[in-house]
Each structure stands twice: as structure tokens, then as C-alpha cells.
Amino acid sequence: MPATNERAFDMPGTLQRAMGFGRPGLIGGAGGKPGKTGGITGCQRVELVAGTSIVRFGQKRLTPNRTSLSARGLFSGAAEGEWWLEQDQFDRVERYATEQRIEVGAAVGALCVVPEEWSDLDIVIFARLKSPLLAYRGSPNPATVRGRLAPKLRDNHNYLIKQLFVPGLANGDVLHDALMIERQVFLHQKARH
Image 1 (cartoon, rainbow, N blue to C red):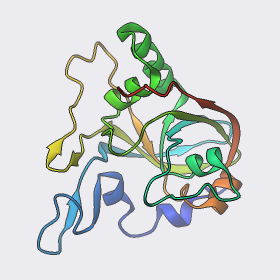
Image 2 (cartoon, rainbow, N blue to C red; image 1 turned 30 degrees about the horizontal axis):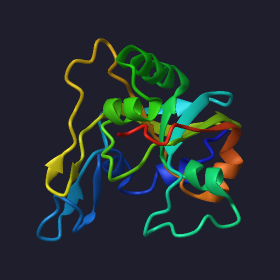
Image 3 (tube, rainbow, N blue to C red; image 1 turned 90 degrees about the horizontal axis):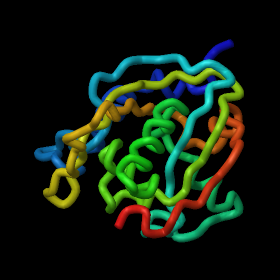
Image 4 (cartoon, one colour; image 1 turned 45 degrees about the horizontal axis):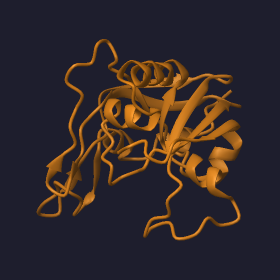
């Protein structure tokens, strides 16, 4: 069975987006060159098989780019994105949160090096693949926001995790064909503070 997102995965520039390279003019980009921020390092192409459990974090807060919830609803909108964790990596996030006595959202922010400006990380989406998907797997890479590098976790105590960049899951049609949303959870509002 072919991967549901094969077309999106094969598009030019997909690996560069996984590595954090964006459009010209983004943070870090100068002279018409693509900017680099965040992404993953050590990208490995993987095929996720049907039945695989993956997890995504989102936020409840509306942003200038997202001013309404639309008919899809809050969780459906949060599920539309290309950055995910495999279940075993999410389990590491939970163990780290417990050990550090912090909220799960704060733990994923630290382990995945997600700047607070990017997301409140107060929604968790649990999904299972209905069909195979192609992805890049790699280690989180710090992002630069407003000239400041997001802090990378120094003392990891074996909590370094791998993220997934799954091209095409920002498209509602691909998401519908590829994933079954099994559970959605609101996290504590003060998860990142």
C-alpha cells in the first residue's frame, strides 16, 4: 500500500523544511536566501506503518494567523500540522515531566526546543495511522525567535527524543485519509510558565 502522503513527501524542499529551512525572509534568511530556524537534525527517512500511534501538541489560543476556529473545531485545527512524536517518544516526555515536576506542555517545550512564542502546547492530540505515511525522524534543533536562540536541554538524563516531520498532514484531506484521532486532551493552562 503506498504512503498516503507520498506526493507531499516527494515535493521539492521537503527535506529542507524538515531541517528548519523556510522561505526567504524568515528569521536567519538574508539576501533572498531561505532562513533557518528550528527543524530537526540527523534527518532519517522512515515509513510509518498503519496502526502506528503518533502524538501532536497544539494550542487553544487563537493567533493572528488563526482568528477563528472554523467548522472543523479546535482539536481538528490543532491536529493539522506536520510535527509529531511517536508514542514511545511521548512516553519519554511524560517521564521527564514527572521527574522534573513540571507540566507535560513545559516538558515537550524543553525536549523539543519549542519557543513559547510558537505555541502554548496546551492541547495534545493522540492519533493512529489508518494508512502508511512517509516522514523524517530526527533530533530537535533550537529555533531562533526575535534574535534569541531557544534554550536546548543541557542535562538530558537520557531524555533526548526524536521528532517526526510528516509532510502533508497540514492538509485536511491527507489528515482525514491518513489518521484516526483517538483522543484529545486539554493540558493545564500554565504549562509553559
